[in-house]
Length: 590
Image (tube, rainbow, N blue to C red; front, side):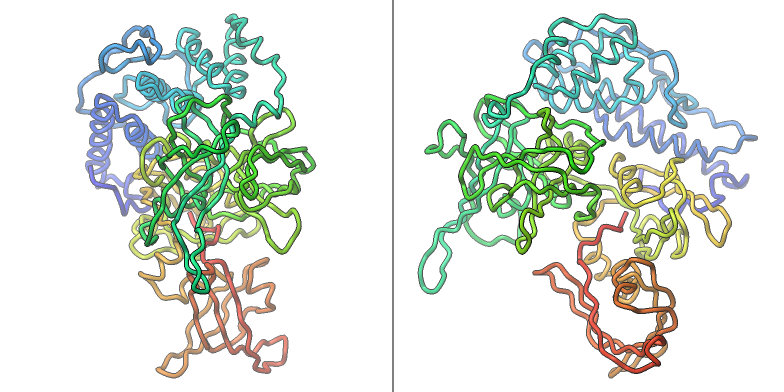
């Protein structure tokens, strides 16, 4: 069915719209069943979650409409063969699991399977296809993982051991123990192993991107990008940074580009590689080379990272492979990327380290090195592994990773998120969200900061309906919004569709009112300044009048520059010229 938009407050609960609401539910149910039968499990989960959002709106006094769809009978759990012994392409059906998962809407009217079933069937499908990494990742996402039967879990436990996935082994072993099942001796021995950093170096690689010859001063110079990567899959898949391999996939790159990797034990041989999936926003890419790695890293869901913890960065600084530098986590929660947060480390990183693994002292992968501040010594950053977990399965699908978004620019205010920008024509705009609304909950989950809001959105497929609860003028308002495709640069995307002044709140942290406009001059007044923003730190305050002198969008340096002549009240309305600069890729859009 088409993507649903414009389901504003009251639509799903008004008596006159009950027929429309029933049609939405039936259409979503029918799509869910069809997608499940076709093995399109990610889309089926999207429809399931959309149904949960719609049912959350169901009036307590009104029964849910009966679905018009074929029934699906539960079947016995299958014997799940290893990929090399898989027979045929028949879908594997998992049993109906007893118990209830706490997510709201888990028991939907007319549904004969739970959300857990969809995740398990998806994992089994990936496992049959030989993608053990993705299948294990999907299984670990299963909401009711703790209720799964041992015969479902044990094959994945053995896969986790083969993949050297310590986090998964520990998690699955804990589930078996809690359910009173015996943990295999193989798993207990695996968990007792001690990691050696020197062994991990065998799982790293130098990334080489040959971009031909560059002419400088009339002389031809070899143009080569050097980075690092690490293997996560025995079939030769490895992770690196997007910016290392950008020329391979960026249509704006005009010229020669060939991708190779170099292994630590044979530094004279360049092995051809190709890009499988990539995420420009999180600066992560998945490559494939025809090699059998000697060591595999796993991508765990590590959230309890604390400043002061010892970490080690591995990679190829300047092309010097098998290098290790040590340091500590200097800080967490750095808002360095558009989505999520970054980890600051003081381990020495240099050009060539980009894309290399950052591991904890116990051998756990905690991040991927991606940037440093050149003018400061050992101020470097890494993408935490928990954010890579969000996209790991999608990276195996060729092309760019898709992220959902609502089309909103936000500013944090007193443990809340206030809407300062609504993109015209976006899902949120069609659903009636307005600037000044304060977001309270997304799908019933309270959100108090940008990281938690983005975390919720990243866990949902594009085209999923989400329930949005906001406060407007002190009154609660509810609406449904459909997730659209997030553009790589929301600001540039918005500037093609809206006035630049509408984005001043999201970019610089100030709401403005236009007083007059002519060919020669545009006059404004500052209506509000948000604490901690560029406008606040520059000394602007409410009611300050100013005229716009220049507006510059520098796409090369990724900054937006605002030059104004302002008459600050605090300075006795004496006119002065100031310049405000903001990143063109801010972190406050969802």
